[in-house]
Image 1 (cartoon, rainbow, N blue to C red):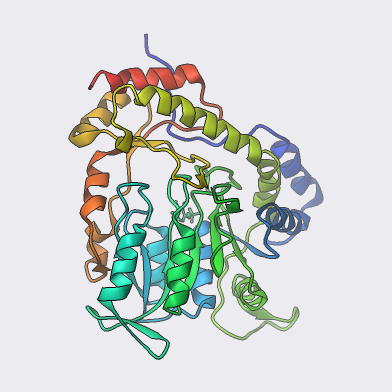
Image 2 (tube, rainbow, N blue to C red):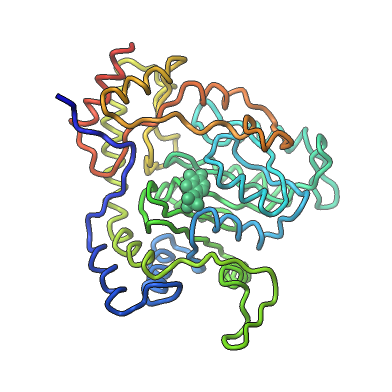
Amino acid sequence: MEEPYIPLCQPFIGGNEASLVQECFETSWISSAGPAVTKFQAEFASYIGSEGAVPVASGTSALHLALIVAGVGPDQEVITSNITFVAPVNAIRYTGAWPVLIDASPSDWQMDVQKLDDFLHSGCAYESGVLRNKATGRIIKAILPVHILGHSVNIVRIVELARKFDLLVIEDASESLGARFGDQLVGTFGDAGCFSFNGNKLMTTGAGGMLISKNPEWIERAGHLSQQAKVGTAEYDHDEIGYNYRMSNLHAALGLGQLAQLDQFIESKRTSAGVYIDLLSEFLPPNAIMSEAAGTKSSYWLYTALFGDRSREIIQKLSQHNIGARPIWRPMHQLSYLKDAYCHNSDFSDRFFREAISLPSSVGITSDEIHRVVRVLASFF
Ligand SMILES: *Cc1c(COP(=O)(O)O)cnc(C)c1O
């Protein structure tokens, strides 16, 4: 008899999402403006503790707008994480800038701050407020650290380094909504923070994103750009290249229902991660198991661990047992369209890609299901 399917990570619709969306139909507020958008923006901003927030169509569009308002442009460079989903790197390329790829650290799997420090001090030349990559000659404008898998990068150290070299910081917190460094939520440390509400993220609007910033001018301009840079209301005047990056009222209504459950979602993910950690510790070494770095609190979006060189075989075996699992993203320096991007060092990224497996992590996954997953994993060790 076939065992029931355990998905990798599916949305959890457990609140009043349906009635909130139904309300949009009843009031005809279904498109790119409406009360739910306004409310979702305000409630999300208040949850995060940010004054300014721009609701947008996706996390990728939030990143694109953040880079534009930060003044990133053609042939400049933005330092980012080599281990990431491709979205932030695409956003950097949209502006005509290039990514500088920094390896992940073996200790927390996030951007390696020692290697970042190394690159800034020995790979760059800093003169009268301008930082230049010695290898490419390009001007470096910003650091875009990606908080991956529900964890936090060492954002305090990154911001310190950025200030020292006059760089802006744009945090990609798409995967780590609700995670903290110290007591503070990730996404709120930098000059701007970006979030995604795609279907597989901690909470979803179906598709959507949010840009936050302490800088009111950035918020104002990003909002303007997200609406085709339209001036006034009547006469179709537009004052620069704009984008159709708005979040629709339907999506925002779904988001309101989800946001109300966010703290429960985080608790559920943390409980599941605890079960994985207990069970995996019986046969994996400590450095193969994803746990929280000291002083951080994770939202454990997608539970991931290192399974050695047989990871692809293990994924196949999980699939035969009707269990969804997948490798981590191919490191950015291995993508053919990025071969002209500067990669500082990729020692750990290559190993991480070979060995990492993301395991079923839906909100509401049961302890029995996790035991079923781990039994298959344990048979390899
Ligand atoms: C999901 C994700 C995004 C944004 O994705 P969208 O699908 O555009 O909302 C950005 N960065 C990272 C690291 C992600 O995982």
